Image (cartoon, rainbow, N blue to C red):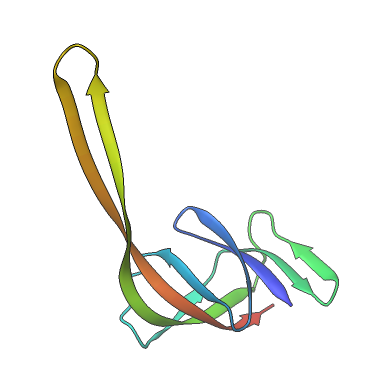
Length: 103
C-alpha cells in the first residue's frame, strides 16, 4: 500500500516505514503529524485518485528531527561592470517517519 501526499508545495510517494526530509513543519520533534492532503492511494492494486484530494484519507507520521539542508550558493554577476554578489541559502527541513496510511 502506498500513497502520494502533498506538503510544502511538493509531492511525495510514501509507504509505511519510509523516512522523508520535507519542508519545515511547525511540530516539535517526537510528536505525531497527520497529512490531510492525500492525492492518491493504492491499496493492493485498487487505486483511488482524488480530485484534488482523496476524501477521508490521511497519512500519519512521527516527526523525528528538525535540521537544515546543504548550503546552496547563488552567484550574480554583470560582466564589465564590477558587480558580483554571492548569496547562500540553507533550507529548513523536517525528518518524518511514516507510521500508517489511513484510506
